[in-house]
Figure 1 (spheres, rainbow, N blue to C red):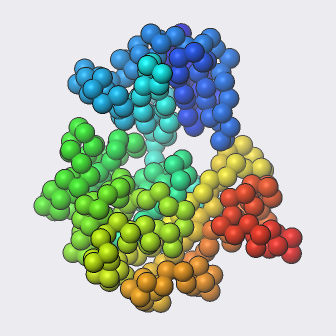
Figure 2 (cartoon, rainbow, N blue to C red; figure 1 turned 90 degrees about the vertical axis):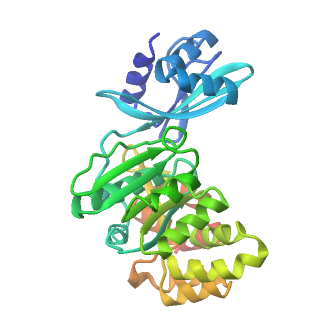
Amino acid sequence: MQLQEILQTAARQDASDIHLISGHPPIIRVHTVMTPMDLPMLAPKSVKEYLSQMVTEKQMSRFEVEKDLDFSYEVQGLSRYRVNAHYQRGTVGLAMRAIRTEVPPLDELNLPEIISRLTYLPRGLVLVTGDTGSGKSTTLAAMIQAMNDRYRKHIITLEDPIEYSFQSNKCLLEQRELGEDMPSFGSGLKHALRQDPDIILVGEMRDLETTALAISAAETGHLVFSTLHTVNASQTVERIIDMYPAGQQNQIRSMLGNTLQAVVSQTLFSRMDQPGMVPAVEVMLCTPAIRNIIREARTFEIPNVIDTNRQLGMISLDNAIAQLYFNSMISREDAIAQAAYPDKLERQLAA
């Protein structure tokens, strides 16, 4: 059984993820549901051979030492994949996420219109957050492509690994991959600031160094995009503040209050009206009221401010979920299961 055969079959079934684990048949995730493929069980030797077809000798050597490896892999004419190789029970396992080779236009992603307007910002920090698999990378890629098609600027992306492959259009667009082109996000970002960028995409603000440099870059006039694994705006602000030692938290609240422009938090749902997925999106825009809340450590007030400023384009996660339900896109059970305040949303849906 050839790797390409597995990937082609998975693509025909519209799989978002492919899992190749010895002792199991290939298993795919289709619209959030894990489904075994109608193929033979995989032998340990086969899975390791699949890995060797996808990586360089240098990557394989690193994998044997570190026992984990993240990389990207492309099959011409089929798809691009974000891959994690790992050991489990002494054998190699592969988890592959399919990435569309062409960046989708923003207007095809069922996102609020305000997301497009964020691509016109001159400077500041924009965060796209959500769980793994919530569509953060696709949203950011579409935003980057929109700016690539519109401006004559310099865009630098720092990724782990590179997912969507961009071509410079009106912008000069450079992509740097963790492990191949830079040793860490912090190092890549520090040196990116000396490479004359206008727009910077940081794959993830995963540590204090990267977070501090991203905020500093936004503070010095760059437009910075990044991600966090948080589920809403208030949690995102608190996560950033909590990265810092207690003695620096007041200072970072002030800096974040000045530089943060928006937090976009996504949750994906299986569609009920047609095959596929649809995002529920919370949007917080940094109005003067939000900036004061951040500076004064009153983040618990953020949900109320979002709810009372819908005319500006803000929307809470639960209201976004309710809209999907009332448009017959998602089921009542899924809506309530993923709500921030399930009891309150249940009453809203029953009204």
